[in-house]
Image (cartoon, rainbow, N blue to C red; front, side, top):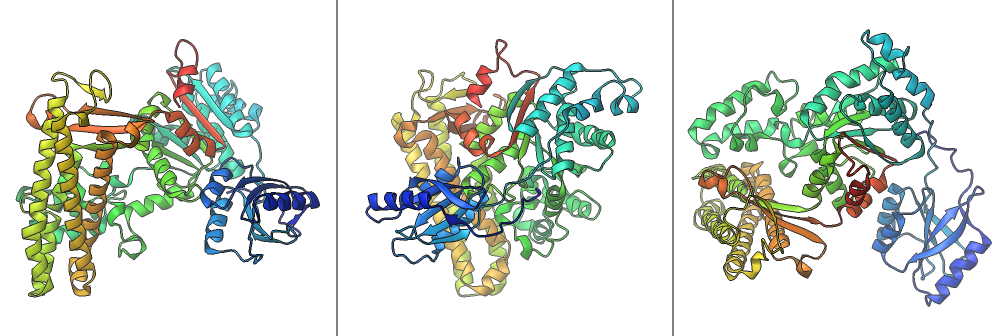
Length: 605
């Protein structure tokens, strides 16, 4: 994505002073392993080594996060054998992703073995602020395109602020009221930077209306104004796309999956597959029932990826390929923070996660950012979500369990028959027990909440004391956690037994992936319940809350509780996981200041 610098003309070598420093530190450590972070000078000598860790790979990676690009991590092998281990190679890859090289040295610091050369500094072409501002000025390209052109000094001022952040790096907070024209003020620098430097910007918004405006109106206008092609794409979450394989699989088992009145919806989706170009829920001419869409939507837990027979025509994969070639991506806040959460969990900060890699971020409607970040950097479990997971297994005799039984039926006696009986005598009853104990936990929590309270109630306050300190809640919680674990183990036993028998695995097919997905969701639900209601260290560092969702009328709506927890110091997490890893961040909104300053939003995010 960037223009590389000149390739190295000769390998790295230790400067004499660096060798003395390394040798002295190793002697102080008794000859044990020490890791150093060092600079590389213009003569490609390793200079100014600083000891940052001792024999701990995680500490090495932590030290690398704040290291300047082009540095090198050096550590000794006390044995004197300068051959990288598997662990060394794994760390070297991670270091390279952070922009660092990696090398080994002997205890005497006389020999240096370079595992991975540090990447050459990227060379970028800065934006010409005067030239860019002229696009929006009287007599410029925008005025030529629009006879009703009106000069907006605030728009030009914002454009300069954004363009400066692309040139110099860092974070900008911009409050721009209605009528400023802020979308052009940030899209023009983003597009111009992409054309000059081939680097990607993600533009994240809170509302679908703004996303549609950016893609349908503003970005085509930017193309016209700059007189060049700028590739852009709207990125939607995976669950918005239909899976061709899952839709056809559901059609073969619809009697086991759905009630009869749902079959018409599935048939309509299958017919729509032949005509849709987009394959997304927004392109479907009707809104399907939740349980129908859940069986046909694209889902990472059950995706076969390149092994899928529909991989090339897959609507989700096609959208990913479009996103990979685009240099301006438009997404919503929740998709952005899903990407952040995946990268943080996997340690992947340089290749595609939910979004392709990017160096620059525009957060429009930024007054909503804290809510979106909180929901993705914490945990949440809802009654409705738990029941949906249980319903995937069994809904009044339909669901994945029924489909598995049906698939095993032609295999006759033996293990297949035993598994069909186990589903009937062990797994289905475990689903029913899980539902019952969750109802009990729900009732106990409702009894603990203030009767008329609405909205989110923070745990550990006078309004909502610790629920688990209530013996009724504690008893029901322990029972719910135990029964969910029992069900998780039953599903795992079923899945593993099928997977161990080739004929059964082939017969069950994609439903094996469905069983694995349910296992993971049950595990996630148990983790969330513990984090919110029985946290380690008393929930230190977390804000935890319970929220009644839905209209208060009707038993089902009133009883849909959401339990959630998120880090108190959200700003620190965001700086570590997102802002600190990017070259440019712009947060803009019509309402960002409090009492005329950005102090509050700076403190929160």
